[in-house]
Length: 227
Picture 1 (cartoon, rainbow, N blue to C red):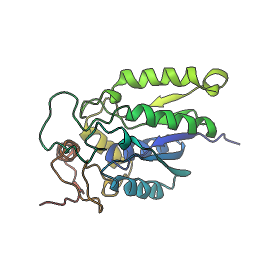
Picture 2 (picture 1 turned 30 degrees about the vertical axis):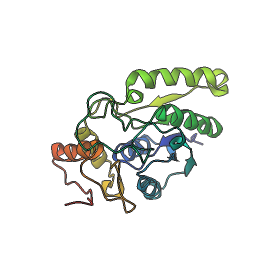
Picture 3 (picture 1 turned 135 degrees about the vertical axis):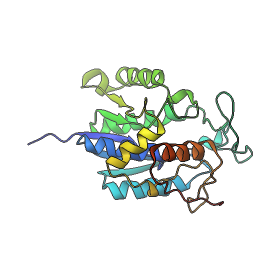
């Protein structure tokens, strides 16, 4: 019998994570997708993640509830802080403190329970907002920690943190996902999408997404609240 390859895939419901899920499945992984209800204002992304998981017929889809809005400090989790609609210098206020560290830690725990050795995450360090926890140095460091801090890392075959989009432009990501059959109309990327998933067209995430589709010369299926 052929041994089943298992992977945990962080699935936000956005364009990048949808592409990573398709890439993992193309490699033959039985994917277990993980989303987080962490107090984000754009909770429509959770509905998008559920749609993507169902469409891809993943092995399991799990949503973990966190209280990251309890610490605040980000426009994505604190209703008192406006989401910027103009370009920002430095690390923007939409950065959520320690988000990817927390997400990867919980993905690591589930991967250990599942006896999965690969964890996929859709971080990117080319067309991105400048978040420090999207950089290759962070991914490499977390993989090192994962193999120090777990039984599977010490006694088993260890873990790999897979970030296949790391060095790709947004256009290249969209092109790759399109080749793999990703239905981007199921995704939500906007930082302030309404309850129906309609995008604002003004935030950093919307700008990066729209520019990516334009550069790839692929029709953008995004639905906007404002025209």
